[in-house]
Image 1 (cartoon, rainbow, N blue to C red):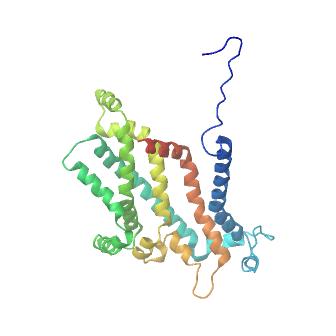
Image 2 (cartoon, rainbow, N blue to C red; image 1 turned 45 degrees about the vertical axis):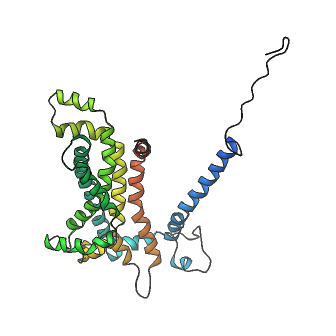
Length: 293
């Protein structure tokens, strides 16, 4: 009950939930985000700094963050020594081929799991998922014997085949969720116009799932680009070595070419950054939609 002649007092709204209020919590999160960004980018920026330093500054007792006498000689030596450029293009070919083959096969399999009902569908799907729990080192000897019997040992094609097989389970799992969320009415309208199953997949499902394909393509490329153990085990011919093996060539038994090594590491990082920047537009959408689904 209110008294006559007295104005109603305005309701005071709290600044927000939380012990310290919304503004202070926002500032705290911003500070934490900046610190985490510095921890992540710090080693990368220091590696870039070392790649431009002469050997005297690198081996000095005092770390130098900003090169006093920057030089690009390290990059010239890194690209020309130890066939590094050849290793670079070998890795690029293997990584791109792995992404293309994985996306095509995973799209076909994910579409089947999402749209069709067949015997043992769920069992086969969970067998794919169970393979993610198997450590890769356990499969090293069986994979070696398999490539040997297929006459694909010591070849980039065989290495690509292994990379595809290791990335397929996660890619199928990720794409199946996106394909299942696409309304069936779209597919039915396509089929009423006489579209085949392959046309439905390539003209409808895949264009609507570009964010998901961008996310899995980025992960697949990085996994193939950085892989070392399989490449070292399956490849014997120096002309077929990939980039991680080429980086190891800069480290000798007695001496290490630190300047070219850091320069080569910077060069090896550039493609992964480019792929991430290219997929960043769809990466945010893909991760957020994947979390909702």
